[in-house]
Amino acid sequence: MKASQIVFLLAVSIIVALGHWYLWMRLVRDPGWPEPWPLVGAIALIALAIYLPAAIILARWLPRDIAGPTTAIAFVWMGFGFLLIAATVAADVARWLGLGAFSLWALFSKEPVDPVRRELLGRGVAATASILAVGSGALALRGGLGEVDVVEVPVSLGRLPRQLSGYTIVQLSDVHVGPTIGRRFVEQIVAKANAERPDAIVITGDLVDGRVAELARHVEPLARLQARHGVYFITGNHEYYSGVEPWVAHLKKLGIRVLRNERVSLGDGAASFDLAGIDDLWGAQFGEGQGADMEKALAGRDPERELVLLAHQPKAIDQAASLGVGLQLSGHTHGGQIFPFNAVVHFAQPYVAGLHRHTEDTQIYVSRGTGCWGPPMRLGAPAEVTKIVLA
Image 1 (tube, rainbow, N blue to C red):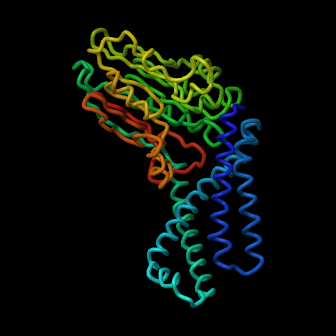
Image 2: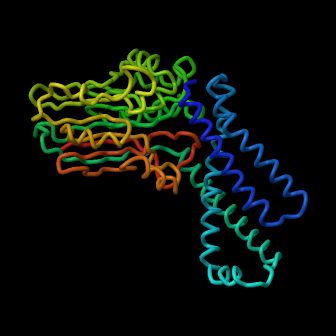
Image 3: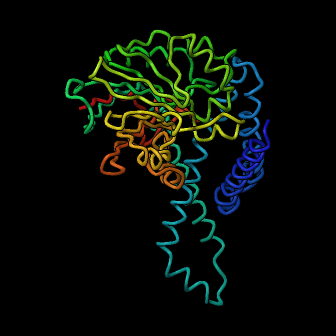
């Protein structure tokens, strides 16, 4: 394991610990529950704080039959825990706003704060947060485990030959085949993609979470993807975590063309356009020759031809625009996956979901993702199989 990965895991573990500490303060300590509930709550939260990162880390070495259930439990708690923290913060903010005048008076008052009133307020926050978390968590599970819809997105491109108006590209992204997503789900999305009878199919990274030896059977249905001009794949950051070279070799065996800082021509004769694909931006951390090289992918191309770029992370868009890309197809963000996490994603990526015009000549479409990472939950960011219709 690389030093950067160790630092990342330590940072995540600290965040997890702080989150559980906050829940202990607001839901266990402050309400003043009678014994033995404070002790029970403290033990439960400590156990969950340890179990969550441990299950995810150990999943890299455990057989999938064991890692699947243990990781699924950890991920479901991750989702509910996130919603519980968000709901508790929201309840706290509502309480502070509602009691602003009283709190200001209490700050300067010499009279002691009524402990009974404090406990009642604490229990009100705990009850409100729990109800909100359970309700939204149930909706999120339904969204994460439900059927994936096809989303049609028309895109007008200035340099596209008129003969190619109506050209269709089906985009799959962020499937995350691994502990919680397996062969049955892959079969379903393959059927949906093929049903659209696309001219091309693209997979914009983060297809897998695990090694080839464990997941080969689950991705095998991808060999049945059918498109007139082929199936194309680019790496995401999770391919690097899972062993990028073995996965690239395996996907080629399934008949999928992997674009690693290179491009191809799609269409028929003169009625064609360029499709380029780059490795994930984070790939450079994994050794010399890895990572995105957009200039290499676009070297020597005719600037009069239309250009569609596959780039896993939306933040590649600035360089893409400077190099004449007409449309960038990305993923990575999951659309935030679980509201209100989409607000956090904005700090890391320029776009979270949907079609955007970045400059006069460059557009970007960011898929909300076809699968789920972590919790099998989606709230306010439904999964999608995307049908891009060029004009």
